[in-house]
Amino acid sequence: MSIEENLRRVRERIARAAARAGRDPAGVGLVVVSKGRTVAEIREVLAAGHRVLGENRAQELREKMSSIAEDVEWHFVGHLQTNKVNMVVGKVRLIHSLDSLKLAEAVSSRACRLGTVQEVLVQVNISGEDSKFGVAPEEARGLLERLVELPGLRVRGLMTIAPLWAEGEEARPYFRRLRELRDELKEAFPAVDLSCLSMGMTQDYEVAVEEGADLVRVGTAVFSG
Image (cartoon, rainbow, N blue to C red):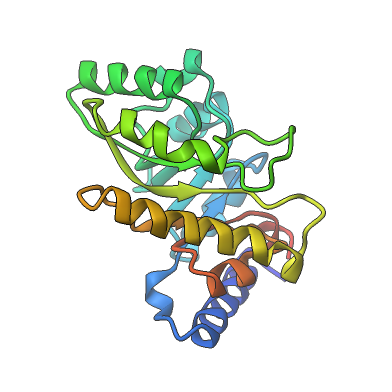
């Protein structure tokens, strides 16, 4: 199948998953993750009418942004090192992977120098795996207390990655827990916009939508079917 056909199929599956959960499909955004994909492949996505792309690596993001002149809403979805902040802040709509106060301070500093406000999601390591980045669920509140004090930074919600072994239904408890954590934090921080949940990838995005994902990050299903 072509990239255009794959993209249509992913959108259809998102819509069906939203319908099963009694949600409006229009409330679920798709971030097409273009990590490792060529500019030619990305242009096929753009030709199919999709404009929201996500990158995992700062260097790759910079190279692709310089090669693609079209109007694209870029998201950064991978682990961001503090020494790569200058390559990302002010260039993407949303950073999905804010996982420490140190990184937050670097993002804040860069955003203030640019005279902009960078929107971010706090990455939470719901699974507790050592291989995953993200703040522990029990530490999310303490981090958020510090983030709301930083200028140039606007927290929009939370992000998580389910364990690699968890496909489909196996990922559901992790997505449900992130939603529950978000709801707890909304009560604790009523003035903070925590409306966005970024969760779900190729192997589990339909379950993520059923559990409340506002953004799903899908690459393989779009580019490889």
